[in-house]
Length: 287
Ligand SMILES: [Cu+2]
Image (cartoon, rainbow, N blue to C red; front, side):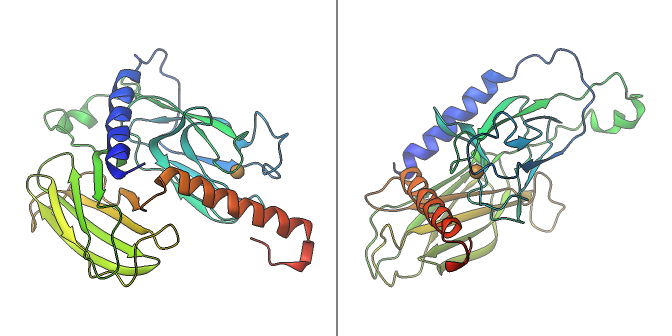
């Protein structure tokens, strides 16, 4: 799958998530953000339906969910379902034991199923719900009513990397962020080596073009090009920036292999290593 396909998936997801914005019924009490833990031993089937604890959380629009991995295996939290694959709303990639991952701000109300790419029996649900307006006096939000808040999700950051780059070539990377006067940082690595690192980019159209340094070797499955864009806010340099500063999106360019296929393969390899490390006990270092 090339990056164009991935960006169209993102666009599709954005459309679907707009369609999913169900009219919130009862305004249940919930906090803005939530924390979910990986159930102990969830790398083995049998934890269902509570492989994520709690398996269902409700947060406010613009809230975030932190996934804390206190289990003894690496897990992912990947928005989507095992049947349909990743939706693009978020993907933690592998979260090692003792580590945590926080989703980008979820700005569109709706139901977000998610799962673990390594252990597809692990499924959970994040419900993003409008805040109740009844329990606010009204005065405290009066100053915000006239100002439209500009929001952004990872799906609004599109990264295009040319596929099939060879040794000695410089690779063009195009970034598109929904909105005007966007600020962002971009980092690209090739087989772990930094080939591009530009901070404080500003684009008044939302589009930016970048070129990496010359590749030391062909881009391949072993030496993919990884690109991460970190949003630094809307605004004109020198003025105050607004929006979900720190929101990131990533893309990977590999020639023959689709990004998702490569990701699933990597995850499968890691889990095989993890399983064999477990069965050999102290023989191999644990992952
Ligand atoms: Cu898992």
